[in-house]
Structures are given as structure tokens and as C-alpha cells.
Image (cartoon, rainbow, N blue to C red; front, side, top):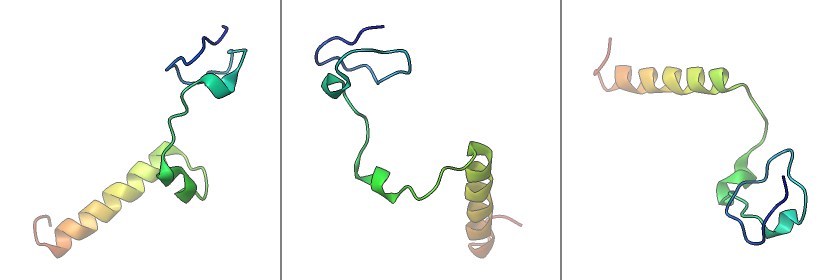
Length: 61
């Protein structure tokens, strides 16, 4: 699949052409990424943290 100039498509594995002309969806937060983890681990950690906060706020037992 060839890229088109100033396309808003995200770069995909099979694309060829001038990748610099594509939109790159990354903000300042991408500099905070320290490691790659499985999504399930991230979601579990978020849920554990949410439970902990709700217990402290006495909204969950």
C-alpha cells in the first residue's frame, strides 16, 4: 500500500513511500513510556489501584 502525500492514515506495516509525510499520532506523553507491558497487566494494575482508592474512600468493601 503506497502512502499519499499528507495522508491522515497512521503508518501501517505494509505501507511504502514517504513515511515522514504521514500523520504521527504521538503526544508529549510518549516520552513517559518506560517499558512495554501486556494490556491485561496494565488493566489489572489500574483496577487494583482503583479498588484501593475506593476502599480508602469507603465506597467499596
